[in-house]
Length: 332
Image (cartoon, rainbow, N blue to C red; front, side, top):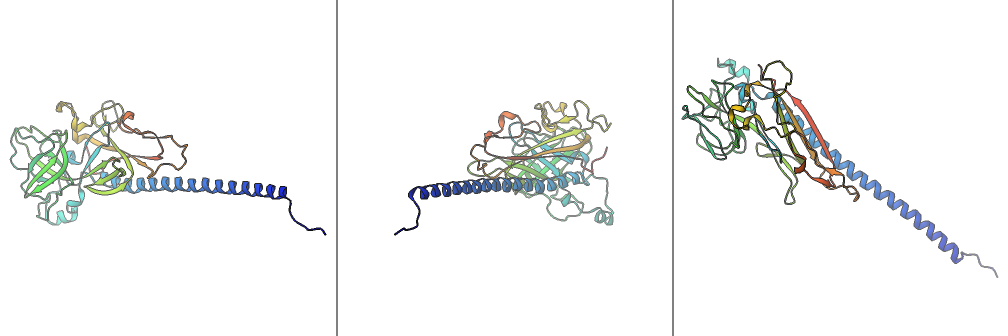
């Protein structure tokens, strides 16, 4: 009597074919999953760039509104780390319509007057004490315009070409600001100086470390994670010809220092000649590329950031955003 069935060889061949099919499907699924993770993270990095760039672009365009033109923009430079950018805060100044209604001067000279100014007045360093006559910038007492972790820019209203200092406010007691001015300094201001403090937005970046991602802050408030670098360059139209000539670009490649920190101070350009700000933002994916053979990630050198201070051969993917923005309230 004959019984139908499979031989051992047939079963072995069938099992081998099924195993190959399963291996192929698993491999295809794994590749697809890794591709999805990479695309998702790159998309997230691009979205971070879009959101941050819109905010920074807006603040640059509004910088200089109703304040001395030399108080529009200032910055601290770093060649081995992120830069720090200060932009005059237009949000604390009342609108032109409100100022006109109060018959107030629209000459663009607003700022909180600084007390104790004499010919030798100078402020610099990490714990500078700046005493104000009031803590608002409009003529009307409409509240406090300065805040801890926000910025301040110090200028002499009577001399647009004089030194400018800028820093982050670390403490406020009554009308006294404690400010980290870094390597910037304002004086000595000389005779007949009229020093004012202008509230400013400050963009600062904390590099990744200790298990935390790189983080970008605006006035001490987190606005985006995984922003790896912020580099800023500046165009000063010193001859007023609307063209970038030799010696008019600062904070660019080659290690050139930012204009507010050059030493001696006499080497600093006329701060009222600033015409354009270029921002370079670098975002990085949250996690390493899941493809273990991907080791091509390398930090992007922009501005005057030295390549030796950046990551090399890691598993990250990066996106770079560069924009040149003219503060529309700063005119020659």
